[in-house]
Each structure stands twice: as structure tokens, then as C-alpha cells.
Length: 52
Image (cartoon, rainbow, N blue to C red; front, top):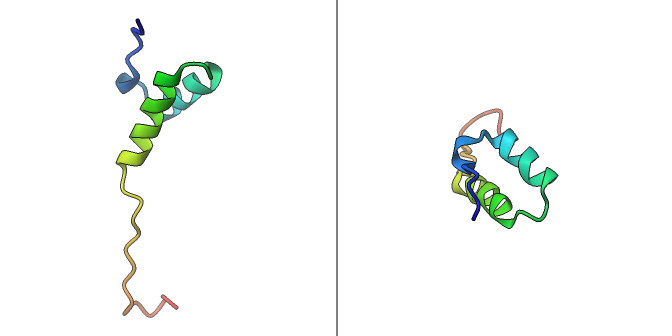
């Protein structure tokens, strides 16, 4: 049983944790779930004069 609370870790702590323990698939999945849950969309205003 894994008693690690991944939700309590910061992004950096969780990344460092799974990089140090590459066999911990739960830690890796928790990190990937966290990354994919964030929006990666960038809003572009085509009327912005600085946008080409």
C-alpha cells in the first residue's frame, strides 16, 4: 500500500519525487494527471496589432 499523499506535494516536489523513484507508477500518474488537468490553451486576439 502506498501511503504517500501526492496531492499535498507541490508540482516541483512531486516531479522530484517521481524522478528519484522511477518505479513508482502512482507518482508518475499523479504528476501527469495534474499536468493534463491544467488548460494549455492560449487566447489570441486577431485584432491585436502586435499579432502577426
